[in-house]
Each structure stands twice: as structure tokens, then as C-alpha cells.
Length: 231
Image 1: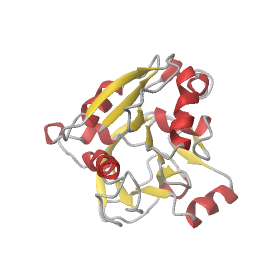
Image 2: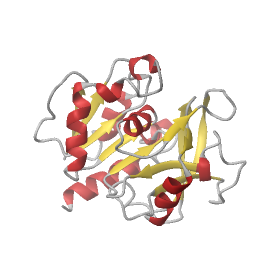
Image 3: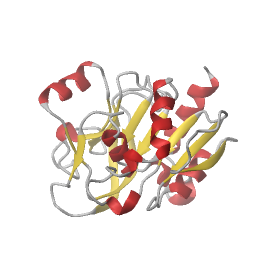
Image 4: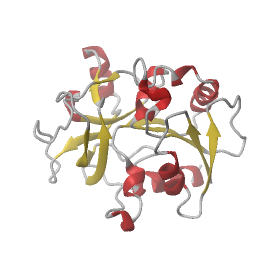
């Protein structure tokens, strides 16, 4: 299968994403934000982390209007998998591919550390090689990762099993102490209703190889590969 990694001015996790996407015999290529089409052989899109357009205005607010995002929206609407990581998650909410918004961390500080995530759903293109209720370790690095949505949106996310990852302790308990940024319901990652678009603040690409200290994040990319190869 083949990934496309979107690159904006200010993206700084694009090469990490390309590396992780290229594992398991897959191929990957960069797609520039000014491009007006997505190559027909691309099976999945990654919107990587960083500071697109310097994070001026709101994070992701300018990127949402890039030429390529019109094509990403079409790509997602066709049912193909799209994953936005950190700044990519912010861009997906700005583009209305995912509900809610990412606010300033409750501490008003940039946070960079390992966290634990409870896997709430294993029936998605991004988690099908993981076990429901299992716990994985993934790094975070963000200043605006505090997920917020109105009550109706939160209820809809719960009713449709769209809350895929929650910040937890090592035993999978959802606690205030395990929540690094104040995110509602300890939300770390959600999908759209069709489950083919995932936004997550933690960086699975940074833990995609044991040489990095952990390879828990590789399961996200394994799952996408498994989904594509089985469809």
C-alpha cells in the first residue's frame, strides 16, 4: 500500500511520519500543501504534526484553506483512511472533518512526555491490530491539546463509539492525574462517524521502532495497512 504525507510550511513531523508509514514494506511520498490533487495510487493520508503556518491565528486555521485540503476532504468522503496527528488533529477539526476543537493545555504550558492511552475501540482502520481496553505508551508534544466540544457533540461521540483513545494510567484507569492537558473525558483521539478519519494528539510515529525506545505506535500503521490490504 502507499501513504501520502501532507507537508505544510511549518510541518516538522513529516519525515517521522514518512518513516513510520514506509515500514512493513509500504511506500510513502510527500504531498505539498499547494498541490491540487492527490495521486490516484495513494491509499491513506497522514496529516503530520508541527506548527503549520507557524500556528498563527488558531492552530490549523490557515492550513484548512490550503489547496490540498479540498482534496483531503474528498479523499475522506470517499471512505479512505485519513489520520491527523497532533497539529494534524487540529487541522482536521478546523476542516470540519472531525467535531470539536483543541484548546490551550490546562497548564498553559507546552507538554512533551510519554503518556499511556487506553484503546476504547478496536474496530477501526487505525486500531484493528490492537485489543480493546489494552494500554499503549505514546509520546505527546503539544501546547494546544485540550479537547473540547459541546455536550451534544460529546454525547454523540460516546453514542457512536468515536472516542478511540483516552489518556489513562498504566493500568488503563481513566483518571484526572493521567490527563496531561485537561481534555474532556481524557480524550486523546477520536474518529468521524464513518470511522475512516482519526485525529489524535499523541505521536504514534515517534514510537514506531524499538530503536526509539518503544514501538507501540507502530500498531496504528499496522492497522491501516491491514485495513487497506483486506479491502
